[in-house]
Length: 175
Image (tube, rainbow, N blue to C red):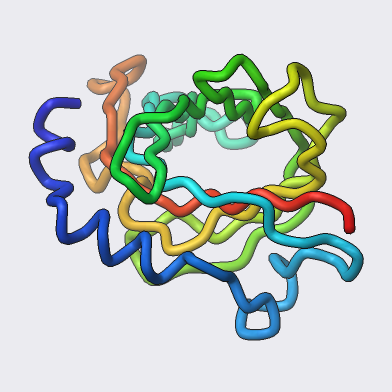
């Protein structure tokens, strides 16, 4: 994780901050657009890693592939302050105690080597804070995070690798 943090410079954080001030859903791929009736509430930059494990394919005995296990990221605000965490579930948790989980409803391809863009419908939120009343979450501007390029075969069966990534997480609420 330390190596990843050294890769993310202040200029990258500033560039992402200015780019995400206001998301224009009309410019996004159709599958990850937030439905009408919802407005942007907040934005964070997630910087972390995705863990993959080398496993045998259930439908192809004797074949192996890197399998997504769990993401983990620190969430930063526009002032480059750590404000929360993102982890499997998916779950976003703010330092103020508010938390939101959700279910993926759509993805759209990103550039090669980057996690796909994503739209998540939020479950009812917990806590009164920045994540209260969130209805949708988008994952945009992804960098990295895809399955390792290393060989996954019988010799590496069970091996886990962490892959660095970053993404903008945009939170919406009903109008």
